[in-house]
Image 1: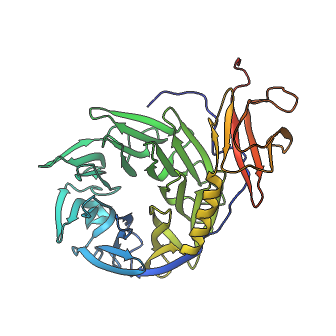
Image 2: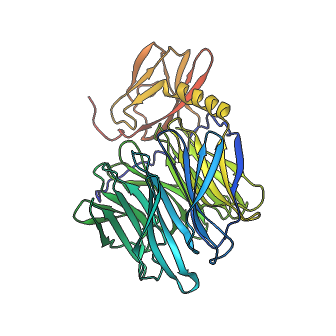
Length: 455
């Protein structure tokens, strides 16, 4: 995946704001107390839309334990997975197709001397726990877990002496190998062949991912301009990775990147002060990214989401110093759920959205999806398809200048990249504005064919 070509960032260019509907959040304290020195909250969702979380609870290394909780349609219940002191200070959770829960976690022996162990637990009616690495020296930190299509667990974590390591269960025993080029293992996803993709800053300190093809690791630089600190990764329905990360170039902002099969596209999402801490990314059913994160400047939990045209940013919770260690998941109806820390009240909090607001947003997204532009970007011509005939259909430049006034028709029409005078437009971003009887829709079109011969 190292092939490179020139590109236009589809998300970073000037866009028209649309459907800026703030969520109506419900906030609940689900457990307390917490030890703020620990790093452990994680989240997943099962096939019945029950949200499962893992986190550490306690006030110090001497009494921190690993907990598992379930949010089931408004009812929350929790249990202790590992009551050993120091368990769960870093963790990740996933669920297989049989509904079995899998958790990887760090168990501290003496955290102040970095003497820690890597543990794995699973639930099949009872909890089972086993050590995977007890060599100490940061073992178990930066731990991530996914299950493959055969429901076997795959883990990326630091093992003894801070070695970034990939471990997987093959049905009879655990296999492991050191991951080259990475400093840590911030996140991991499995591709459609169940091969791992692992993210973190590389040995060059740039934001990197490394792809495993079943035999070798292939490092790929996401952002060559600066080191990143903490990141989160998710795959879209095409199997392409998306990443959210904190950008350390002096601005300490939140950045986002995605891979399109050939190259990485990156952009700044939020640079309002010192922000982007502990990002967590999820991809909804429209392949749109959502990112939760903590702002030091505002001492709050924030969420940003791509709506198909622009980024929407909102404060989820600002009641005290809240939002560190956020973990985000989306259900199949595109409802977001977030677990995070409340450092003012030393509690674990859970945020979810009032469904009536989400239903309103879903209707806006449905209307937006009624207009299809393909291909986009385009070189020669693109087809604009609408579910109903618009009253007017106009194309504007980024400066707001009218470029083309198209004759509205029912069904589909073609724009050939020419203005009202028949002159081919310059390469760049243009905006399609369609006015219907009861709504207006704005969509972005990218033209790249100025210097290409067309018939």
